[in-house]
Length: 257
Image 1 (cartoon, one colour):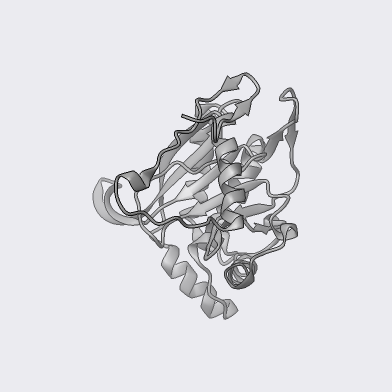
Image 2: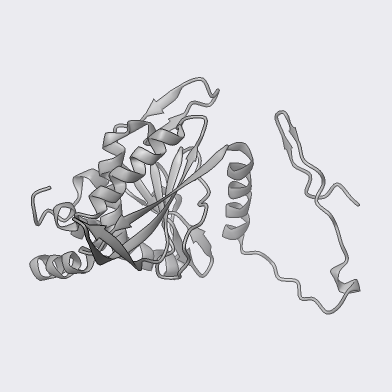
């Protein structure tokens, strides 16, 4: 076994990656990884190995979300995906819990609290995963955020994005809702300290005022850096996020919070 793929990190020595002649067992095909995928792979591997990840699961009641999206389109003439509402819910949670809108200093002894809300979102493109950033999401409406997401996503799929549109994020959302799933562990986008994941919404009977009612629930998966955030605060953050998302008209500015 060779030492190819051996990784050196301070205080950590990983075993070398196994080198195997797969062709000895049957037909194979070798494909070159796109440049962006190689960059992303190295970054994700670093983040997973160096950050102590914990993932907290929660469910948000989004029963009223579709109606809010229809009303928003009637008022503004613009369509909004659930991701735009999730970004506004994230702003509410980040404002309530500033430690989630932070980064560890380079030496690991200081915490940098950010006063801005630049939110990244995972975008699936033909050339691999990109994470564009919506700047100053706290100062933009759901409709404005939705339009920006659409424009950037279209550009990313067509010709990629410059680094200037993927820098400076303070929190990231990874929504797999269109693809399915019930839960997952999103990898933190360092130097951020948390990332919110969402999977496919589902119908669930919920007891309300003593009566059972069918509600639309959105599974949430919050991964956080345990060096910075404890489990109780993660639960509070998720609850605040879910509560904000359950009131989509207020998020869209169409109704008082």
